Amino acid sequence: MPVQLLFAMLRNPASIGAVLPSSRTLANAMAGAAVGADTVVELGAGTGPVTEALMRRLPGVPLIAVELQPALARRLQARFPSVDVREAAAKEVVDGLIERPGRLVLVSSLPFRSLPREVAAETVDSICRFLVRDRERKLVQFTYQPRAPFAVPRHLRWHRRVVVWRNTPPAGVWELRAVE
Image (cartoon, rainbow, N blue to C red):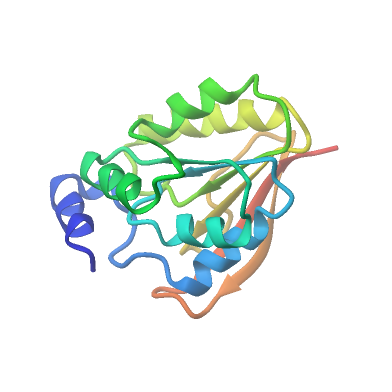
C-alpha cells in the first residue's frame, strides 16, 4: 500500500473507500468502459491505478483527475504531468463541467457508501444533473456491493458491465446513463 494512501486513510477514513488500490484488472475494466469519450473526468483518482489505465487505453483523450486529498493530488500531478489534476471535491468539478460539450465520461472510484451522507447526496445530485444534460454522457463506477452503487431518479438507469474477480475484494463495474 502506498504510504500516501495509508496517511490519507488515517486522516479521513470515510474519504478512502478501499484498503488497497484498485487492481490492474479493475483499472483496465474501468478504462475500457470509457472508450469513445471526448474527455474523461476521473473522480477519486487516489494513487492513480485507474489514471494510468485511462492514459494507456485512451491516449490523446483529455483527462481531468479529481482528488480531494492534497498529498494524493500532488503525487498524481508528479506522476502524470500531462493530466489536469484538480485538488477539489467531485461535486465542484462536475458542476463546473456541466456546460462543456462533447461525450464526457465520468470514471469514479468514489466510496459513496462510506462518504458522509450529505457529501454523498450532493455528489450524486451533481452527477445526475450532469448526466441528463447530454445522453452521450455516462458515469462508470465500481462498487464492492452486488447491487447498483447508489439510487438514482427514474430518468437514469444503471447497467452492470462486469464483475472483476481479480480485485481485492471483487468489484462490479457499473454504467449510469440517462434513459432514452
